[in-house]
Length: 119
Image 1 (cartoon, one colour):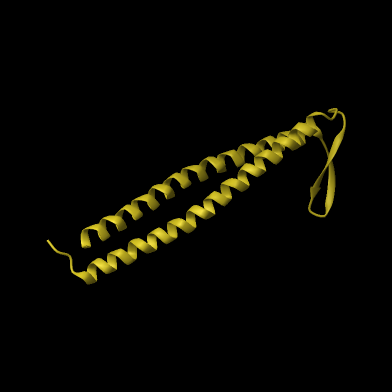
Image 2 (tube, rainbow, N blue to C red):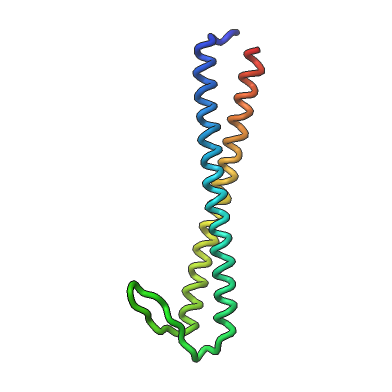
């Protein structure tokens, strides 16, 4: 069974477009993962530093154009919540990365199959 060259060319172009899009998406997701990991490290360091300060001392939190004096425990609780949310986002991005890597590998395999069979 032979596939007409025009149809084969069209399929090949569609798969190549999918490969290029997957590469772009992979790069973007990897950058987002790196940023989330940096955010988590920064939050951990900030919480460690705040825990060394006596609980009776307040910290200043920026709210728009003003600052509020809040208890350290409240600030640490907010940071822990932010860290948890960031970790959830990191987990979702990791799953997305796995999906994109699988899509990329499958598209590359399809190109190799088409080129191998057409020759």
